[in-house]
Image (cartoon, rainbow, N blue to C red; front, side, top):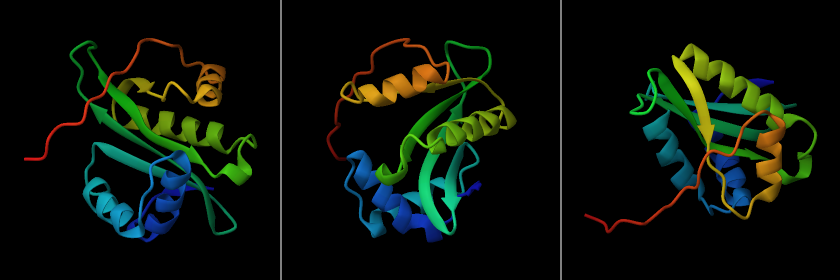
Length: 142
């Protein structure tokens, strides 16, 4: 079953984000959800089976300089390592795409770390094309 995330899902999200390579405590996940969940530009969906969260994905929809319609960005996407390659990710992405449309997006994009070749193949299988290269830089605290 795919459903909306709630603050009560912070523990599951912390575990999944840690599996993805972003060590996250329960408190950090809860604080992040408290900022994201009330914002209508964001959607956070979970794949749950028999009461266990097996994966989650989140999108942010915003206006675009390059396109006439809003663009959805898959900001986070992770499936529990124990259940990968069972269709959970594909179902989550399809649900995120449907949600993006209802939020007014005419395009959806995703970035993925260079080292995640399995993820690249996954997105390409779902019809996503390689369109660029992302660069990042940490900024000093204010």
